[in-house]
Length: 623
Image 1 (cartoon, rainbow, N blue to C red):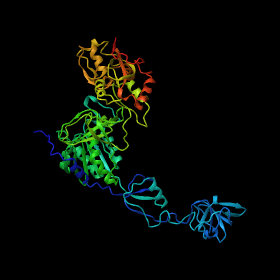
Image 2 (cartoon, helix red, strand yellow):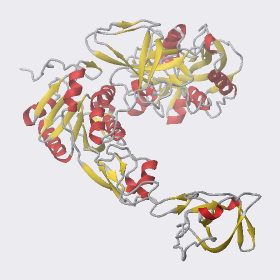
Image 3 (cartoon, rainbow, N blue to C red):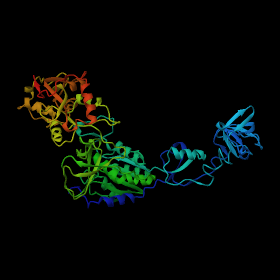
Image 4 (cartoon, rainbow, N blue to C red):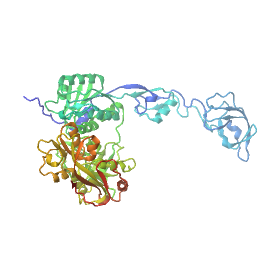
């Protein structure tokens, strides 16, 4: 009998939020030095232990005197008062001010006994040792009395206050050295899966190894939500090892987060560990991405099992777990930043679950916002880095029509969609061009390397501002072009003795670019009878597979081969054009792109040449 376990009834998202909120994550109260309190949340009310200021303080540079001695004083009828002393800030007055006298005083100094006002030095004139006071004063003028800022016993700060530089200044004035704050919940982070390798260690792609993306990603998200992340070593799909590590983490942390091994397959064991050693409250939520979510309790600790795919893990964390961490840390829910826009293209969905669709935002030639999907799947980290936010789709929604109004929930209020959006081919020339485009108020251009075929389709839908493409007749305006030499990338020394496309027999392991790219089309034109081979995205992926020994030959660029130390068999050159969407030529960001194109240098890129003639042929030249 199979160990595979079917998902139970999927928990509705609203119910799941309540369950996670009810886990009882309570890190308690911590006393921290004032110097370390910035950003922390006050756990208790703080009352003023003393008056601020603690004395009657001069608020101006001038002369302390009795206000009654200035009655009737004016510029034309000044009052003469002899100066009988001086008081500086930080020193105790050594006498009193008698009738008909004044004492020179500095801002912040203690007002001497007998004086009830301070006249500004600008409102006096000097006549030897006598000051000629030119204005009449009332008692209290020029003086900040004791306790005027805050009085002893007053409520200084309420509980729940997030401490910033302003509050720090008040607490320092009150002489408070340490403050009681809400402790940050300690959140244990465990990645599961036999295929995971820590970041920084080499991968063995032949066995399907991948870097552990979730541990550093979730740790950063925990810290942003107000928690204290505590990372544990990753654990494979072994029941006993996983049970031991989860038990240890639950004893040391307020909340344990694992990622991966939450599905219902025979090798996913986390849910069985929770069932047998704790209490499993939720197995599966009606949301996409993020269906295989676990919620439970381990001993006295709370537990949430996030899906293994990075997009699913980060999405479910942001929606369901981060609010509970913020609540435990005493942080308020952040303001939800949203943008309204229209769908640029139609998008269809399978109904039945709440869906969070990663989207990007751009503007058309008239300044109206366009929203486009960027979802590459739950396993693609770029589904989030290429996105500005998400569109939440109700379970019954089956499609979004082009032109339909949608609301985008930005990932944070700090997100500002890029001013320039490009699509198309990839390569070192494209990267150099993008690096040379001047940012718009700190916003670099966004570029989606989806291949020329997809880019042309999106241009017809009026989505990107520009393309980089090898295709002719795109319907746009060519701004500039360059050529690049392409061919076969082989191991150093060319052990298979590949000298031409005719040497690509069925015994030769070949890898080339995916369908829809210019290099794929160029190779197809020359190699009707060549083996199909494997495909990979990007211009460098085939070369990397040759380096790793997973391929004998790859289709690639001379620039790539020379940079990574491989051999190269030339097959032709290909021209790439920078093509501007005709409806976007008036955008200021496009003007910056034009400056970058005109000044682009391909020096140092082997096999590259600038092509200055616009609208030149894009066909590959073969040799």
